[in-house]
Length: 242
Image (cartoon, rainbow, N blue to C red; front, side, top):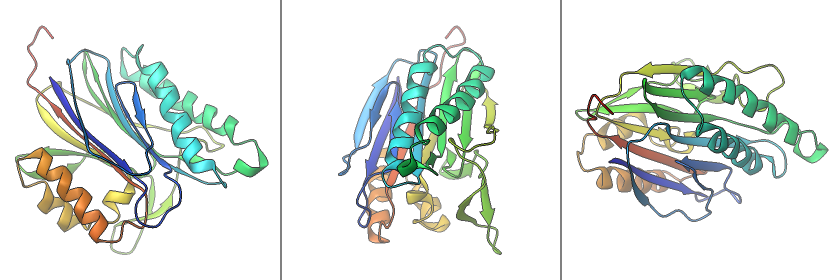
């Protein structure tokens, strides 16, 4: 079974949750987060994603929700990576169409996700919400940050592309073999509030429930000045015949 731990929360400062999370058709954008654990049969296509919205008076929460709704609807028909890329370009257009209203101009959203296909595991992202692999307690970022970087090489909160922007987006996709593994997808309300050292230390613990609680507790202890959301996705060893 594929095991997913899912969490999204308003944080301690913001008035709206502009993050949203998607797990196999289940979409959540709650204000007060509670950790949800789910199991799924490893049947392709299986899709999970985190979106971090921005812009406009009510635009951010709308943008992330629209994006994940479109991805949820389209992902059931995904067969190969080109389907994912086409959907992300289409999703960007759908988000931008919502933003034609004067009160919503400038809205957009990041997205970071993974999809289990028959031919491989596809990691995809637009924006700065990261996807990490966790292997033997070691954290490795797979996604590519669409960010302006500071003098220390760390990404800032200025992003270079998002779903909803005017030019066509160029999604990042990486195809990996389908093999057992653990992945962490999160908004920058986690990765930008926990230090890299805190995040690396957190993933050293093998118990994923404890990892999830450590992320929640550390983010809140550090101020939780942004909405914060994450998915921990554990993919089992699959037989060669699927």
